[in-house]
Image 1 (cartoon, rainbow, N blue to C red):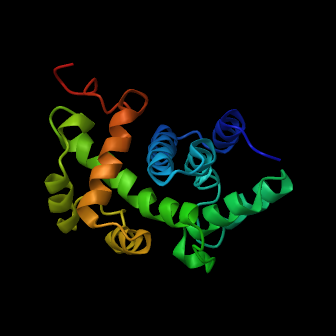
Image 2: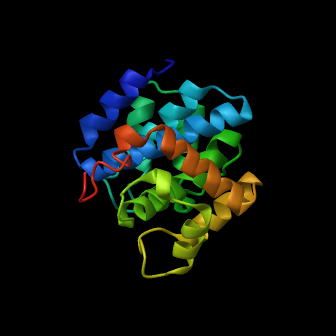
Image 3: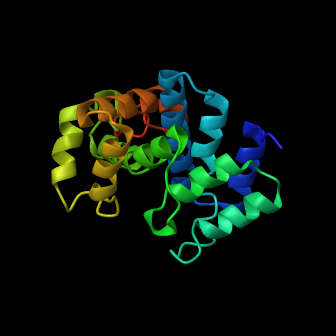
Length: 193
């Protein structure tokens, strides 16, 4: 089976009702699509991996279950093994090596996509277009900000991808700018909008 984006979207919505988790999936999808173009890879396939990487999280949030239950569901439904391995690899606790560029990229963009989104949302404008690399780096040093984001995973992701931190942050910002409307990071959520 070669999954389509429509199938990935349906799967995500079958298991996920939280608007914030759906937006996170869309943000990671945007970052994966951006990097697929940058690396000359299959943008549709990489986007699908970003979209579904956490599809099981709402129903199975414990480390004992996520993303293992998701992998089981994907296998039962005939999804390709490279996609399943990339999904498994985005969690350090799974023991699944990130041995493909797609898997390393998913790991590298997952936490950072969420973090950059949080940086945009605390700006008065609530716009990704007002987020700068320097402000993301400053917020990364603030341990009280977006506490749930693992800084260790952000830095490990950059190391595994082999891209300088500033460049990686800039890439994720650019990716999220491309999806600003669907992510509601285009400024419409600001008090003045």
